[in-house]
Amino acid sequence: MNGGMLVALIVAGGLGAGVRYVVDALVTRGRQGAFPIGILVVNVTGSTLLGLVTGLGALVGPDWLAVVGVGLLGGYTTFSTVSLDTVELARRGRRDWAVVNLAGTFAASVVGAAIGLVIGGILPR
Image (cartoon, rainbow, N blue to C red; front, top):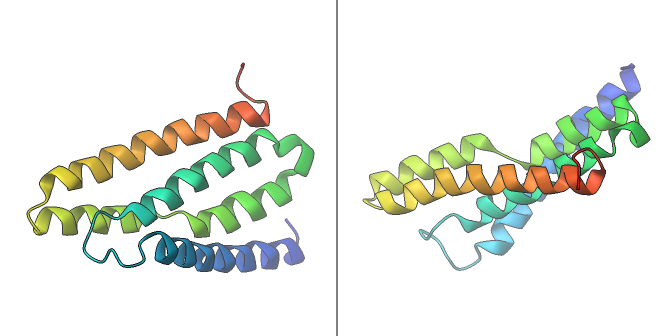
């Protein structure tokens, strides 16, 4: 990866983080303290898109795959926020939501990635 592509990867990571903030804010508008559905939406859509981009990797090339996959979608998705949200839910006495958040995010994200890969042509249909 040359210097220009590295800069593109860094910029894409910042852009992905900004888009994550906007999507989370739009989805959770007026729902403070409720189940963190915004971050769930972010991680599932990000995993699906990463599967799709990975499936199409041969068409976009390894450098652009890194820019979009590692940069943009890596900045967009977040494991650390899921972890913090899960701990906060448990701390507030919502252990049921904490389990759903952790297990649901994992399961839905894996399914999303698989769907993206199928659409991208990697997995058999």
